[in-house]
Amino acid sequence: MSVFTVTKNEAEAFKDFFPEDIYSNIEKENYYTLGAFDDEEFVAGVLQFFVGFDENKGTYSRICYLYVPEEFTDGEIAFLLMDEYKNVALESGISENLVEVLDDSCVFVYAAQAKELCEMDSIKAASGKNIYSISFIDNLEFIKIKKQVANGVELEQKRFYEDEISSFYKAKDGCALLLVKKDDSENLVITFLGCDNPEIEDRLVNLLAYSVKRARDQYGEDVLIRIEYKDYLELASIFKAIPQVQPLSAIAEA
Image (cartoon, rainbow, N blue to C red; front, side):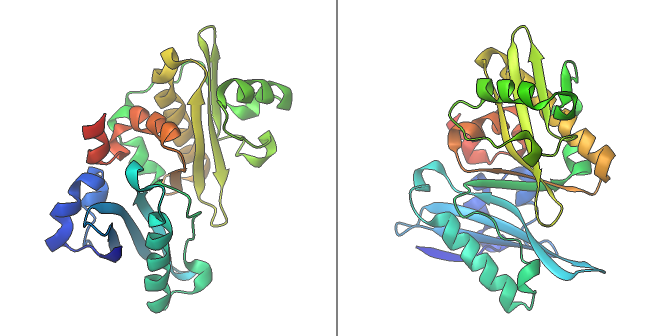
């Protein structure tokens, strides 16, 4: 197993493992991209991170994208990529507390500012009908919806999620839920998106559009929104809702 920096020279070999916008960042100023090969030289995962400067914090780094193909999720690819990322960031002089760290069980991470997500075609075309923030419902109603859509996924109590940004859909044809948390860096993290009826999966993009636009209105267009997943079955919901974030290899497999 080998992990190394991906430059423009190697980028073509990795192209299918990135969505278009992330691929275009390779060797762009302040963006750094890592790739992993397995022992037979198959692409086993990719990670891209951004290094920036904040007047109040100083130099920091954050992960823009992580993707580990499903056939490699039984290994330690995410751990190796994130370990190499942390080593590179720390060796570059970035303070440890300003190096973003994620759970190494993640198989997919995508991060963008609210304004960038709002410009995606699927988000712009979405409807807000019957979509509301979970601040409109009490704990009992939240628990009912959560049980219907969880499908075995362990979800936390309502108070752990961003009340105004997390959203739900409920109508005669079923219900759906999108849950958002705030991390230590005040970024918004989408941790769950699901519904209780496969026939209303097209409503999921409406939840995403509602929450992304609400985040923009509440926190400003530059607020960072991160999507992260540990499970490929759940990840399929995101890919269907906003195909612009999925790697080309996932499109080929669909």
